[in-house]
Length: 51
Figure 1 (cartoon, rainbow, N blue to C red):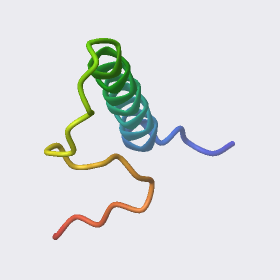
Figure 2 (cartoon, one colour):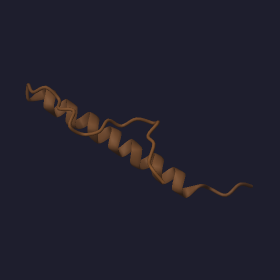
Figure 3 (cartoon, one colour):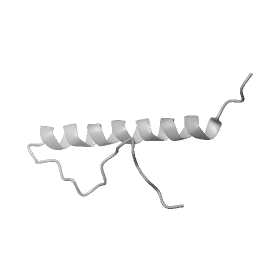
Figure 4 (cartoon, one colour):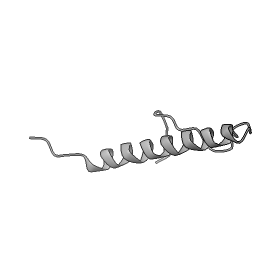
C-alpha cells in the first residue's frame, strides 16, 4: 500500500482556498459596481516556483 502524500494534499487544499477566496473577492467587487482589479496574481494550476 502506498504512503499518503500529505504535502501534495496540503498544497491542493491551499490552492482551492486561494481560488475560492479570489472568486469571492471578485463577486464582492462586482456587487459594489466596481471592476475587479487584477493587482493580485491569478490562481492557476500550472504555477512555477523557483527552487
